[in-house]
Amino acid sequence: MWRSSRSFSSKLLLRSSSPNPRDPIASSSIISTSYGVVRNPHLYSSSIPASSSSASDSFKLGFPQPDGARAFSATAVDLSSLASASASRARQVADLASHYARCYWELSKARLSMLVVATSGTGFVLGSGSALDFPGLCWTCAGTMMVAASANSLNQVFEINNDAKMKRTRQRPLPSGRITIPHAVTWASSIGVAGTALLAGKANMLAAGLAASNLVLYAFVYTPLKQIHPVNTWVGAVVGAIPPLLGWVAASGQVSLNGMILPAALYFWQLPHFMALAYLCRNDYAAGGFRMFSLADASGRRTALVALRNSLYLLPLGYLAYDWGVTSGWFCLESSILTLAISYAAFSFYRDRTAQKARKMFHASLLYLPVFMSGLLLHRLPDNQQLVQEDNSMEVVELSSSLGTLAEESENLDQRNHEMGSTGGKQARPPVAYASVAPFPFLPAPLYAAP
Ligand SMILES: CC(C)=CCC/C(C)=C/CC/C(C)=C/COP(=O)(O)OP(=O)(O)O
Image 1 (cartoon, helix red, strand yellow):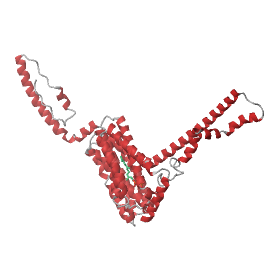
Image 2: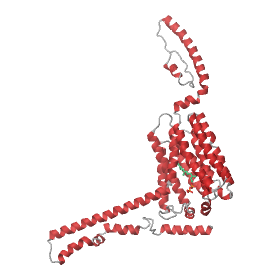
Image 3: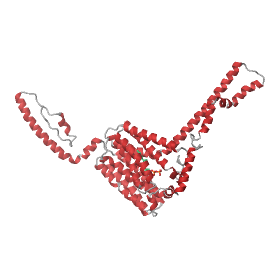
């Protein structure tokens, strides 16, 4: 096994260092040959047979041309070949650009990265309060996309040999030899550094730190762990839970308890999602050399149980979102219905462990996340309402204490006014702060000190 993977990797190294017909940079001879047509005057003149033949034919027919006409026709020939050479060069550049754009897209696992961006963007909106900083949201999404793309590209660099052995992944750019390892590493490091710098400059250092740490956790801890221990799925669930927290932190500048609803949902949601995948693709994972949980569970019972347990853990999240003032009560209802649906799919899989039931659970998980996030956004309470809701229970107590203080202060004021009136001084007025106590009963009533 070890020997075969070693010989495979040496084949890959050979492939990436020798000219590769599918990697346009590695097969530079093709490009330089055709570029030579433009740059090298000898090649250039020999590459214009069609139009030059008409010029030489006129000599053969015995109609000598005057010098000026000859020079003119030569220049016309030169110009037309120059135009066709530059058109072919432009085509090659366009082909090269589209080849690498496709490789970068696949290396970045663009659809997965866009899902990651959606969770981070939702976290940003939830952490924004009443005023949404739209440019801030765009910068955060762009930075998250870049760091996630970098993490996914590094994951493929480290898994090149494993991906080559799996049906699902063998067409990826690295195992199929469409891009070289140094090229992929250069791409991954440049977007990783640029994305982290973007988050540091446009959001804050905490968000940038979370993104960078998550990249390390995914590429350097989770990725090797996949070949070592089934606990990898739980570590991967932490990786997936960080982006919504990153979004919240980018908007609010801090980690807070009510910012943990979406990260918790992402963490628990990933277990039924990845357990379904690990069950459905278990032969492929085994061929790739990955130690997934489902491989040591021939009956699938424990795999289904993990999925069911973690689906049920999603149940309190709707209530907590409501109780912690993140959303209105409607979300509590919606989230409960949604969680019961995914739990039912997991329970069906537990009772009847077939590929069909596992696929159903996978589809239920695909539905869960976008609906859960839309519900959060739809029923989210802006900051001022959150504060009122959070302190609803304290309202009566605080209000009566504020009123008590007000009455006391007002008595003192009357006394002072009376004294001042009797001395003929200016009449003292209560500060405006008193009037602002009403909508914020949680604030301590300001003490009024006469000037
Ligand atoms: C900001 C930042 C760094 C975000 C990173 C987010 C991220 C990459 C989440 C993916 C989570 C995950 C466990 C994916 C599965 O990878 P896999 O290796 O099992 O997938 P594969 O088998 O298709 O390669």
